Length: 79
Image (cartoon, rainbow, N blue to C red; front, side, top):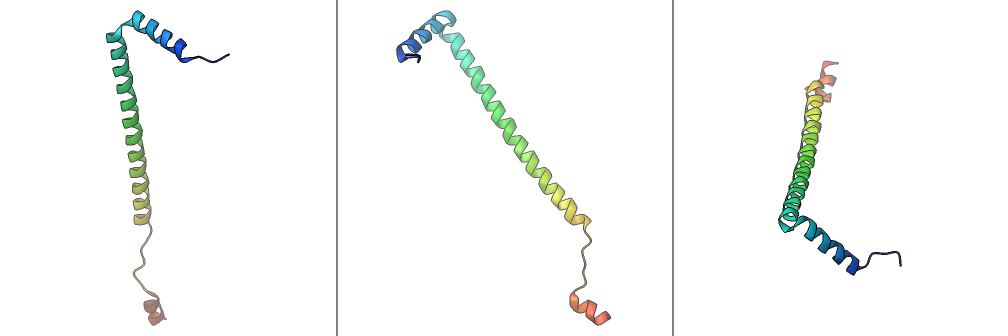
């Protein structure tokens, strides 16, 4: 009734195996797995690069701000 049953999926699987063969399907699976692994690696490297850039910007910003070495007591003594 509108859905795909398990038997229909099994028939499709058998037809695909007969058409392509197990070696070709194994190769496709290996290639697909390698592509997914490469994608995950690229995403994690991108996140690391973004974190590094944020830290670098914070360090540059803090280095650009002048640091006052005078304390409030030093300012009062000068007055």
